[in-house]
Structures are given as C-alpha cells and as structure tokens.
Image (tube, rainbow, N blue to C red; front, top):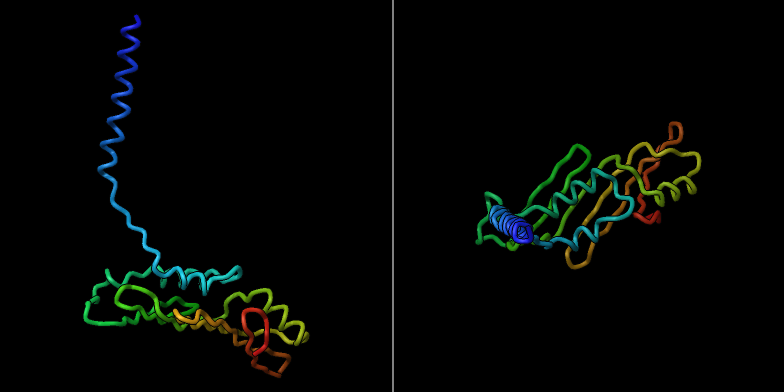
Length: 168
C-alpha cells in the first residue's frame, strides 16, 4: 500500500514537472524597449483627452527600425499620425528615439483648470471651438497650449491659454 502511494506521488510529480518544461519552449521571446518614455512623461497628464492619449501612445510605441523604409544611411525619419480629431508629426533618430513632435488636436475636452480660468475671466462667454497644440523637444520637454474661440452673441474673441489655465 505504501509503495503504491509513493509511486502515485512520484508519477504525479514527474508528469507535473515535465509538462511545464515543454510549454516554455513554445512561448515567443518578448523584448521590452522603453526608448520614448520621456515623451509620454512630458506630454501626458491627468486630464489628457482620450483621443490625444491614444495618438500620443501610438507615436511613442512606433518602431522606426522595423518600418519598411528604414535604412541606416538616414539620421532622421519623419512620421505622421492621424485621427479625425488630430495629428502628430514626429521626428525619430536612426536608433528609434523620438526627438521632437508637432501636434494639433481639434475640439478636445478641456482640462478643468482651463475651463475654470476662462469662465471666471469671461463669465458670459461660451467656448465655441478649441485647438490643443503640443510641441515636444527631447532636450527641453513639452509646451502645451489651447487656442480658444469664445462667443457672446454676435461677438467673437480668440484667446490662448496654457494647460494650467494661465492666459498667454
């Protein structure tokens, strides 16, 4: 009886130890590269609109080295990313690092600091349209500003505000 229990346990251990060894050979190798983390950290924020966030993540995740037109001869590659709400023109170096961007988004959700600042300074005006502009440079970081069109009846006013709600 003791011998049969020992054989049962030994057989289960052998079966349990060999199955995972075979399954590890079938998994593909994954290499995680975080070359553009500085870009995401600079342009991201707590209140970034969803379409903006998606397009910025696509630009950060883009791999120039695996693109069809990559050649070692060129120092800089320019790639455009488009969605109906905005666009990014991104420049990458030959190692795949994102060195600068020019971004423009139309009619995105405004951060609360911007909305509060505009409504407190222009209480009877409404925001009829907005453009969110981002410029990123690897050395100096990102600048973010909003160009807003305000309306009050038949009057129109254009203002520029940064992401903190300060008028420019």
